[in-house]
Length: 152
Image (cartoon, rainbow, N blue to C red; front, side, top):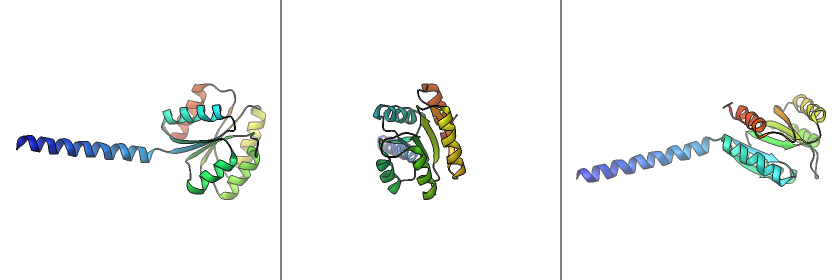
């Protein structure tokens, strides 16, 4: 009889632990990274997952649009130059949609361009979190993502 009580308690503890784990997974903020360079998108995604985001990496603006039809991520990481549309047009599109996601802009074309894009994003009412020039160091990306998630 005592053994049954212990087994029941153990099962209840396991169920509570599962609920906590599921709750933590559900509570994790979401991030979408859009970069036509698959390696870069994958790198940003991996770092974001380690920081604590649920992540989706896409390699085109078309894929991003499709993602935004069914989800509203907490953060969107945008490469400014992509083949199908540039980041400036995407900034305008996101502003027209009333996007409330935090925006992180990345580019390998220099700080001047990034700062110009940042000013446009802010002027259009987007919530700009940061700009990062490629190539960037892991610690720089991690720091920006931790601030975005509220742990840094």
